[in-house]
Structures are given as C-alpha cells and as structure tokens.
Amino acid sequence: MLLAIGCTPSDDAAEEPDEPAEVAEPVDPYVRGLSTAHMEEARARGEALPRLHSMVVARHGEVLFEERFGGPSLNTPVNVKSVSKSLLSALVGAAIEQDYLRGTDQAIAPFFEDYLGPEADPRKQDITVAHLLTMQSGLERTSGGNYGAWVSSPNWARYKITRPLQADPGTARSYSTGNSHLLSAVLTQATGQSTWAFAQSVLAEPLGIRLPQWPADPQGIYFGGNDMMISPRDLVRIGELYRKGGYLDGQRILPQDWVRASFRPRATSRWSGAGYGYGWFISHIEDHIAYYGWGYGGQYLYVLPGLELTIVITSDPYNSGGRGHRSDLQQIVAEEIVPAAIKGADADAVAAQEESAGPPSS
Image 1 (cartoon, helix red, strand yellow):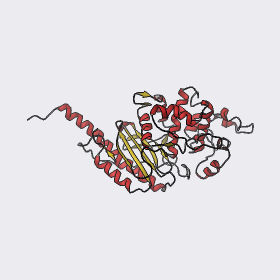
Image 2 (image 1 turned 90 degrees about the vertical axis):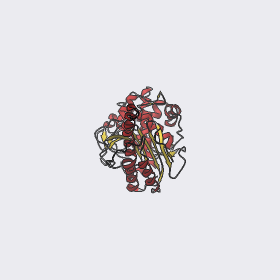
Image 3 (image 1 turned 60 degrees about the vertical axis):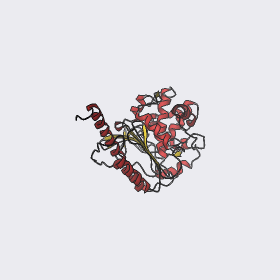
Image 4 (image 1 turned 60 degrees about the horizontal axis):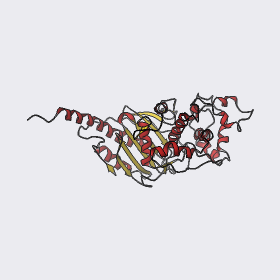
C-alpha cells in the first residue's frame, strides 16, 4: 500500500448503482491531502471484501493511496467491463475533433444501410451518435435478459440495429451495451481502422498507457462499451485526463468542450436517479459532484473535480457479488475516501493560513 500524506454475465445483468450515501464528518485540521485515519479504514474495509482487487486514489494529481487486495498487479491490464463506455466516449470525442464524425447530432443510419431495408421503421433514420452515447436510441435492449441472445448472434451490429423501437429516439433512456457496440461499428467505418487501432493513436500513445486488444464480434468489430483492458494505474490517468478538462502532463489529449459535454446530464437512470451524460454517470457525494464510470462486478472510475480527486476500484469481473458488493464499495467511497479528501482540502487551507501568518510571537 502507498499512503503519502502531504505531498461473463453481462455488465448489464443489473443496472446502475444506488446513489452514494451522504456522510457528514468533522474536519481534522492536522492532516493534508488525505486523512490517514479514513484511508486506513478504507483499506481495512477493502480487505474484508473477497472480490475486491484494487483501489487507487489520486489527489491534486498525485497518487497518494494504492492497494492491491487480490488479482493481478496494479500495472496489469484488467477487464473493466462497462467502464469501457466512458473510454469509448473519449474515442467518439476524438473522432469528432479529427473530422471523422460531424458531431453528436450525426445520424447513424447511413452506417447500417445494408441492415435497414425499406421495411425498417422510418424512425431509425433519426437515431444519432448522441442517442447511442446517452442510451436513448429507443431500440429494444440487448442487455439484461436479452444479452445472451445478442452476443450469441452471428452479427451483433445487425442484431441491435434491427431490434424494434420501443420509444422514439431521444425520448427515453434504456441502458443497453448494444448501443455502445453500434458506436464501435460507427467508429470502425468512419475512421477506416479498428476501434482498438484508433484507441492506440488517440489515447494509449498520447497518455503513455497500455490498451491491449479486447474481444471483438464475429465481424471483427471490437466490443463497444464492454471488456476493454486497462491497468488500475493507467485508468487513473484516464480519470485525471477528464478531471483536468482533456489535458494531462501539459498536453491536450481531448477537447475541453468534449469533457464538459460528456459530464453534462442528458438523461436519468430510472434505477438510481443518477444523471447520465456521454458514457458517464453524474451524482453527488458529500455535496461534491461526482462523475463516474461503472462496470459489472464492481469496477469504478470516479472523478470529483471539486476535490481534485480521482478514484479507481477494480474487482473480480466475472463474479459480481451481487448488490451487496457494489453497495460496500460505494460506502467505502462515500464514507471514507471522499471524507478523507474533504478533510485534506480543509487542512490545506488551514496550513496555508498558518504559513501566511508566520511563526507565533514570543
């Protein structure tokens, strides 16, 4: 553990997490960065969770806490399940910036002309890139009870785009990894390269991280929104990239406007009430806004810009542990990690005031 103070069921078998609990904690004016007591408690609570693999916390751009509880090392790429949707959103933003796509209002039907014959519902012509990003395509879900039939089909993109419309595009949110996979198919056609190859050029290489190849469908289209591989330490860099508005290490990787657009609530989860932007959930913890990606089994990437805080949690991706495991992780974040940062934030201000006041008079 590093603690420095002062310096295949589908992802969709269960829907989004509950809202994190709100916990009020007194301020400890004698710690900076992260509260040692809270982080030690976070570690102890994590050790009691057999499915938990890792926890990494960065504050003010510096990793102050990291712990491997089980599973691979912190530098080993692991399956982050539906946190992949947040990564896929970054690829869409990069494709728009590089003029491969016109924008989020671009219709997707032209990419699937071979599958949309004259008998297709004409409303499918209205489905846009934004509708896929926000889970508002209106297409029947390919998640939950429908997931198995979808991924067993010989053509995933065709299966999804030919599902019946259950709502007009843009009017209702229904969480479905099939929407994200259509985005991967769009990226493949628009960029003229695989989603994995595009990810290397716009994310992996500029950030100095590893994004190994992940599963693809029978047509060779890389799985959109699921099963991407990235190490916990590299996932922190993705979080920091978004926390800093598309910049990292003095380099602009993503447009600042794309980060802002991704973090803007555009739909609401009917399960938790959390907002949903372009591949990111939006909620509040201790009155601080939190943006997060969430994946099956207990994979999380939290970004809290107001606290200059990024949190990565990985778990066994093939054994969810049910709602109990997710709840335990959310409570550790809400009751230990965020309060540790709040105390550290307040302590930083106290220390600055003490420094400006100078030494006490004799």
